[in-house]
Length: 295
Image (cartoon, rainbow, N blue to C red; front, side, top):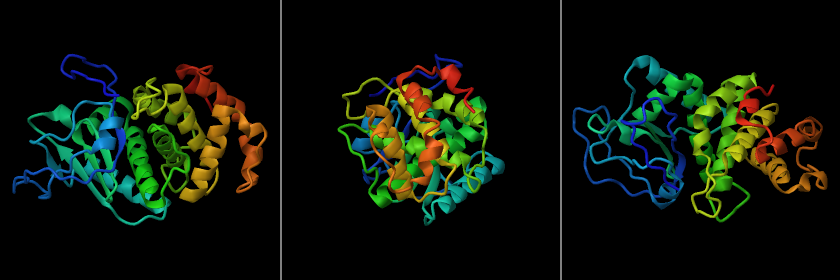
């Protein structure tokens, strides 16, 4: 589903944004001006990204690829977060760049993870996220995008549907996990994570039969909460995937009461305290406001 926004007319509104995965490796034809810090071409979103996008701007013909943001402080923060996220998951280096468009700034309200080892992060989404929620929001978005890199590398998620929902919910979970881990963002107070996720809640949708369906807002809130809870444990990407869908699918269909966690049984006692809570988040019984007050 696409949502069309006129950013000039909706002053102060919470903007919906794209936390998306892209499998298309098609390159845009125009070459960047030599004055820019990066001279490679802007890679355009492919079919899957278009299905999953929640803004109607993609990288425009006037966009340029850069190695930094407006200030050294901002650039260093994002590069440091990228390094920590990669280290947390034991990954290898990837291409991380920023996209700017002085003539059409709103076209960079996007963040895209490509299957060939690249993450492009728009200027507009970075500065709006920082203004509305602080650094933690951009850390969350970046961790979500890197979650798609884990999916590409390890052929995840292990659960498939006819929509993008499992991919996006798991990426939300990866983000919640990173924000809690001591060797990640190290944020142990969920209230601050929930406040950051409030910025992103509008990426949920109710187009449940659409190929680009990301999950409803309550489902996405429950996914980031589950990722945060699993951050109590040191998990590989494969173990995270197993546990995420063991508990999340259980919340959705009720099978968790019959099944046993055979892969990481030590997690069951801890998670049993939160199953009812996760179900209530997923169904909307716990509201967005109550979600912010969870411990």
